[in-house]
Image (cartoon, rainbow, N blue to C red; front, side, top):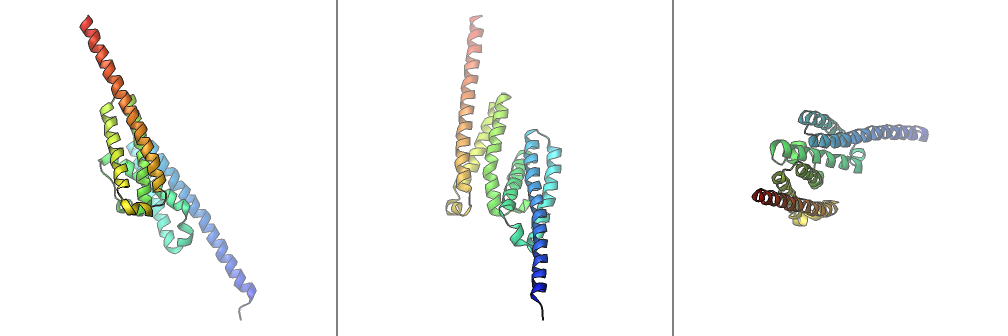
Length: 209
């Protein structure tokens, strides 16, 4: 006959083991988020080699987490894991667009549809930063190209129709994205007007000499 002490002893051991796994996996999730953020920063710094290295490490950790999820789904599938996958998806989407001028698929990076979609929405903010950088460099044409891509992502997300409601947090992210796009459009319009005025003044000055 198994005593209560033995039963509770086994329960305690199980709980302690799961707690350790939870702590270990949460640390890995934080690392995935950190690596993904670093990869995005490296993309803006135009350091493709380091970006690829960073994303490779992040991928290894994501694969490790997904393997653990098969054994401990109640521990792995929490809010923190979803957030880490969103950041990871955003970094991969952004990098593939910059490097190959195409959208990476959820299957290619092994990310669920919801996290992929939310990461895609966040990528719009990164393109605002790129647009501002190009405007500072005087490349209005490239800034307009980035704005067009921001519009494309936003409109395609909005066109999800009824599926839109099945992605928690997407409405909030697209509301933010809409504001980002409009502000960026205003920045580009202002720069175009400034450039036109500058060109006009140069032309006028040349005709007076």
